[in-house]
Amino acid sequence: MTNVDYSKKWAVMISVAFGVFLATIDSSIVNISLPTFVKELHTSFAAVQWVVLSYLLTITVLLLGIGRLSDIVGKKKLYISGFLVFIIGSFLCGISARVEFLIAFRVVQAIGGAFLMALGPALLAEGFPPEQRGQALGINGLAVSLGIIMGPTLGGIILSRFGWHWIFFVNIPIGIIAIAIAFRALPADIHRHGEKFDFAGAIFLFLTLLSLLFGLTMSQDTGALSIWTMVFLTSFIVFLILFIRIENKTVQPVIDLTLFQNKIFRVNLITGFLTFIASAGTIFLMPFYLQNVLDYDPEFAGLLMAVFPIALGICGPLAGWLSDKYGFRLLTIIGLAVLALSYMNLTRLSTQTTWQEFVLFYLPLGIGMGLFQSPNNSAILNNAA
Image (cartoon, rainbow, N blue to C red; front, side, top):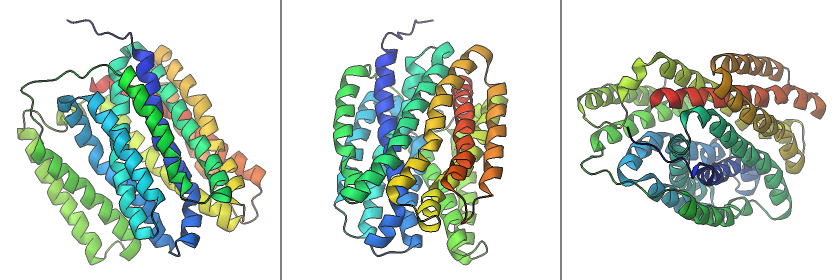
């Protein structure tokens, strides 16, 4: 068995942290800016939600294919390419004059973001020994938190003083610095000869996820039983069956379906999926609640939303360190319990809620995610190896 060189693990950590920071600060800045888009681009809530949805849809359908492609082409090459595409997308978003252009260029930005998000955890898994991966993922969670913390706060300041265009332009200098660090920090790619990319599997995976996500989106716009919803969801089932058949017959598939035979991998992956669905919906709606219902300005709303990532940033690294020492099971259960408590509290929000009450209700969401996320991700990666 060959020895793996972990000597550059902290340099890899810095590079991955920059990528995660860039992707998350952009996401959180855009969320706090949604009410501003509605006003300044003279559009509706239904249209402006596609500024977020186009980004998330693109990342979702590309993530798994990129992971397999990086095994063949090389992680360093694709990771740096991700930064370049993200910077270009950010510039194009910043010069957009119509919501349609903004949505289209968010897709470009998301292509770069998909490379950063898909390859970050993989680079950490390769760069750190198994007994330190929980700690590495916890520190990575801290970078996520810093991006989310600075996003609403910085976004509120930028919106108030410079205009919404600059929430995208701010990504450009960060991205340039990140590229310079990645060139020096990441180890050279190891070229694997004889491996082939599963194009058929990637295409049907793309069609499967796209059909599902469009079906769910159309269900809220046109109704769960509308023709378009049923067409997309039926297409999802057909494409999923074809995808599974292709992957079972492929020697080097996009997704190794045998991984799902591992109970820990399967359960933790599903739990993480459900948890992020719940938290993403909450985070998406909060800027509208704070600005449109409680009538706070963007700057103060951004400060209030920073409660979540601050708690996540404190609890995430601690939970990662504890999971390396004592295991993931108890921490994930405690994290889920705290999340459930937070969602119960958030149902009490009203037009009369004070900012102090909001902080009290919103804070456990960050604590719960911090306790759950790092141990859960560590368990998934260790059981996928």
